[in-house]
Amino acid sequence: RRQLGTAMGEARRQRRLLLGVVCVALLLDNMLYMVIVPIIPDYIAAMRGGTAGPSALLPARYPPASGSNEDVQIGVLFASKAMLQLLVNPLSGTLIDRVGYEAPLLAGLGVLFLSTTTFAFAENYATLFAARSLQGLGSAFADTAGIALIADRYAEEPARSRALGTALACISFGSLAAPPFGGVLYEFAGKRVPFLVLACVCLLDGLLLLLLAPPGGTGARANMPVGTPIHRLMIDPYIAVVAGALATCNIPLAFLEPTIANWMKESMGASEWEVGLTWLPAFFPHVLGVYVTVQLAAAYPHLQWFYGALGMAIIGASSCLVPACRNFGQVIIPLCGICFGIALVDTALLPTLAFLVDVRHVSVYGSVYAIADISYCVAYALGPIVAGQIVHTMGFAQLNLGMGLANVLYAPVLLFLKNVCQMKPSHSERNILLEEGPKGLYDTIKMEERRGVGKSLQPAGEIDENGMGSYHRDLKGASEEESSDYEYS
Image 1 (cartoon, one colour):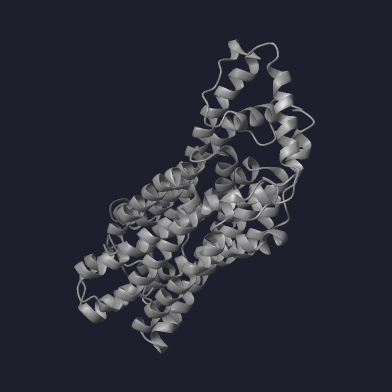
Image 2 (cartoon, one colour):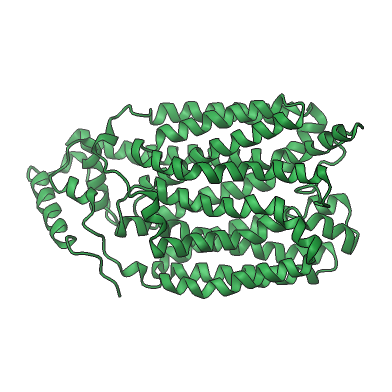
């Protein structure tokens, strides 16, 4: 009993440290995604046979897509990460479900370290493309396993929403802070230094993960059920609705990033520093959106679908307002609206995916968050390649109106999720395994944590002699109550 009490306390401390490890991994991945931006001009100059220097500390998010071969190469370079990640995610999700979360997360960090060091010593386009593709491979494991690990360790609400919100804030900060970070170090220390700094942080993060949760070290995975196959999750109508919302809400951001810089220069004569600072203010409303949604979800958890629908409506309205802006100050407002709306959608729907798996399938989260990652990758794989062509053939205003209309029309679809909170857990494989009684310390801790939601933990020394007997009686009663099939409203 003392061992159980001590282990439960250690598990709660350990999950906070693991949350920190995952947040650092997500931060690194998104910083690596954008830190290359200040270095792109040098490679463009090398392709042209000229020279270039780090003249812009806060450059545009992507080079403008004018249709030339060089611009196509740059677009493919930026899209290659999301494209490979899109292809690998179905396999990574299945593997995560079978081997656990820690080993794929560690493998993903290892690949990200290799990708970062390759970036540091790249001297031509082919090496850059290989490094970018390696990053997509590492992200498919690190991002999916990290988010799934958070959902598994934070099984109760509102702790799960707060933890996932923290991870989303790190993603946003990494994307927005990377270009200034890369530009400053590039100018004063050389192009290799930003990547070497990120590689060192990645290595330290992997070592900390090894100390906290050695893959296969505890044998806990032996008592865990096999997750639902990813193809079955994809045809679940509720999960499909959430995945569609995640993809649709990220399309405006993914399509504006490669096109808005050129439009600002042509339509309002924006300077380089204005173009570079365009997205930086959007970080603050994104964090505000995460905070607001977490607080609302804690107070009114049955309205998660509404927060997502409201976010999509805000994204749609903001996208339609972008072409009407005539100066730098005006364009900041709709961009902040887009990021605020994305925060509402992501923070509301990512925990909903875990809840859907809990009540309709098996509580193993690798495949369901691989589906979420696929949704993001669809938008970011198409953006750098397709957005410029749409602007060239149809116009910037038409692009924004189309994206805004898509979000506004999709918002009512989230009404389909209105009664999700009233679903009851199914008699899943996890329940079948655990109703026989805990077979190890891992199962005992998990069951005690679930019984202790909303209650303060009883000290280990005060557990009565019949404590484990009452535990088995409660477990048996819970199993009988949950043995019915799904109940829908």
